[in-house]
Amino acid sequence: MISCSEAVKQLWEYLDGTVDESDRALVEEHLSRCRRCCGELEFARELRRVLAKSASVDLPADVLRRLNQTLEELNP
Amino acid sequence: MAVALGGVAQTAPADAGPCFRDLAREQLPRLLSIARRLVGDDAEDAVQDCLLKAFQKFHQLHTPAAASAWLTKILVNCCRDRGRATARRPTQIDFDAVEEFSLYRKIASEDPFPYSDSLHLDFLAEFGPEDVRAVLLRLPEIYRIPLVLVYMEGFLARELAETIEVPLGTVLARLHRGRKLFETQMWEYAEEAGMLGGGRR
Image (cartoon, rainbow over all chains, first blue to last red; front, side, top):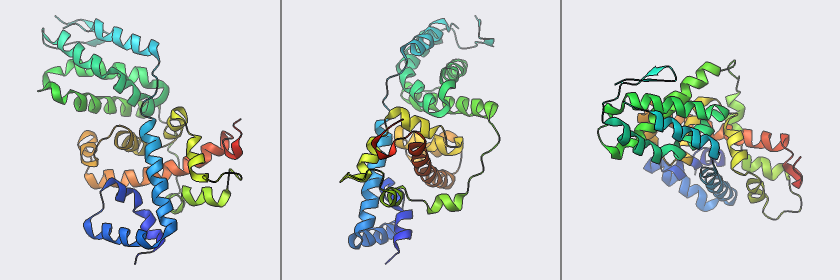
């Protein structure tokens, strides 16, 4: 079984689906026996949600207005 | 006809104006949102640069379906140009220390919310969109761009590799280091902003 340190290094890649099949199996085997690393996995999952959620923020209306104005002024 | 806007000659085909405007207008909020996370206060200028460059190169866009990825690529390049122009001395990063850092373990050992029964979630709940943006802006650009495009804009790693024109292996390595750096900077930001212990300064 791989160590906690080796498993943790691959958790994000595991969630991204970018680890190869054999590494994936090793991570899953480790997770099936290590509660702390399961906690790390859940935390990584939650952190990804925080990042994804932060993508949708209110944009400054005045900036959007000026950029729209730039578009209107573009003439061939 | 060619006119100058902001000192840049516009050389798009005669029928390009309305079509380009429609495509670009639809993408504007997304472009501004990405730029705010990539270059902070320079976002408006970066999007302006992007619109002008995209308009000049509009004939290179073969299908409207590709407009989103095409505009994103131009925007990322404009943001990189702006980043280069305003770059300060490169920050020295101790990647061995960063590699060993685990935000999960740090939170558990430092116990920033002593009365919490969901310590890790409470830590993350302190971070609103503006805090996340501030943390991202602390990262060197080569790590910031992959994090923003993959984890916030939903790019696949291979799509990002095409967009920024680097090998897939390089993108995966930058994502790995970027995530670790982001975790270290989240902790430092939380300390500096007084977010720990339940009392923001």
